[in-house]
Length: 450
Image 1 (spheres, rainbow, N blue to C red):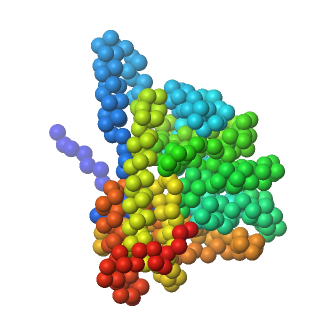
Image 2: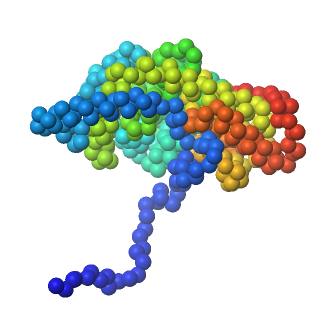
C-alpha cells in the first residue's frame, strides 16, 4: 500500500506583524532569570520552606478514598479530574471564606470568594477588566512587577508614590489624584498596595497608615483599592491580620487578593474577594483565559486549609525568619556600603549601594557567571511611568540602577551567607575598591537600615 506524503509548496518563512506590546514591553525579569540554575538563587520568590510531608499525607488520603470509590463503581471519582466551575470549587471556597471571616476579619460568604490560577492571574484580570489606554493607576515606588507589566500592557499611565521604611506614604495620595486630574484629565482608577512585607522592598504598613489610606480613598467613589496580601501569613513574631478590607463590610471599595503559594506551595491557586460587579467581570475574563483552575489541586488545598495550615504555619514562618536573619547578617558583614531594608516578614530584602553610578542590570551577568542571581531593582519601576516627588510634583519616573531585590526564601541560612559573601566580593571589586582583608572587619560600618 502506498503511503501519502504531505508536501508544502511554499517554503518561504512566515512573516507576521505582532501586537505593539510584544516589542515594547520586556519579558518579566523574574521569568527570564528562571532559566539560570546558579548555586545561589536570590531572584524570584521561590518558596523553600514547604510542608511536603503534609501534602504527601493529603495525597495518600485522596488516593485511598478514590480507590474505595472505584471499587463501588462510583462516578464521583471523576470530579477531581474534570472541568469545574470558573469561580472555583465550592468546598475550597467555603473553607477559605470561613478562614477569611475568622482570621482576616473580612465579611464574606463562599459565593464572594473567587479562585484563580495563581494570584498573578487575578492581577492580570483586574487590569484587563478595568484599564483602557490612558487610564491612571497609583502605586508605590518601587512596586511589584507582576502588577506593573500587565498594567503597562493595557496602556495604563502608572503614577508612583513615595515610600519609606513604613511603606506607602499616604499623604501623597490626595496630591497625586489632583495632579493626575490636572495633567491627564482623568482621576486614577486603582490604588495598588501590598500592605504586608511588600514586594520588592519588604516594608509593612502600620495600622495608622492603613487607616489614613482608607480615609483618603473612601472620599472618592471612583477609586478602587487593590489590597494584595500575598505575604500576610509570612509575618515574623506575634502578629494579627487586620487588612484594609476589614473597613469594607459591604464589599464595595476594596479588592482583597491572596495566594496559596507562600502559605502552602506553588500550586498556582490564588483566592480573592472582589466588589460584586468587578467579581463578575473577572470571572468572565478568567473563563476566556483558562476556563477553570485545576479541580485536583483545589481538592488538595481544601484539605490543607481545613486541617493542616495552622499546624504548619509556625514552622513555615520560623524557617523564613531564620533565612531572613541570615541574609541581613550577611549583608551587614559582606556587602559594600549602602542601605537595605530589614523586613518583618515576606521573602525579600531591598539593597541599594551607595555608588549611584552602579548598574545592577549590567552587573548581573558577572554575578551569574560566579553562581549568584538576583533581580535588578530597575525592573520594579514603570518603563514610561510618572512619579509624585516628595516636593509634590508630577514628573517622569526615574529608574535608579543601583538597587537590587534579594530573595531569601529558597536557600537555607548557610547557603544564603555563602552566596551573599560571593556577591559582596564581586560588588567590592566592581566598585574598584580593595576588598577588605576580613569582611567581618566592616560589619555595620557605612550602612543604614531603611
